[in-house]
Length: 162
Image (cartoon, rainbow, N blue to C red; front, side, top):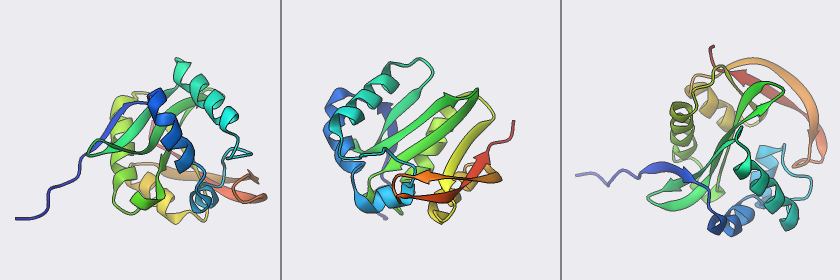
């Protein structure tokens, strides 16, 4: 008899999640991997204003990711210049467990818009692999300033089939 399978689920983000999410999104290694992050990850007021605005926006689908009921990250879909993009953030102690893949699959089930787009630092092979397993295809690259690296870097642009 094997160990019980951990359950990944999505639920609405609650104000009581803000402290934990703020701490998760300040982890230096996570910031470096995500690359395209807030200008100042230590600015709590900016973090709360951004999250509050997202949660109130009808064009944003933002959910907490839980593992067996424990908050371990977020996943979201939002519209930029008419395209629906997805993003996710999993707390570093939970990397490598398939949580991002499962959370993204649940998001794709909940968000009917297609095609969906995603972006990842081109050297973030794990994130690109998560997106490709979910059906995203690489459609190009771009170069932009990444706050998490304090430098211009290449990012990979991906899209689901229409």
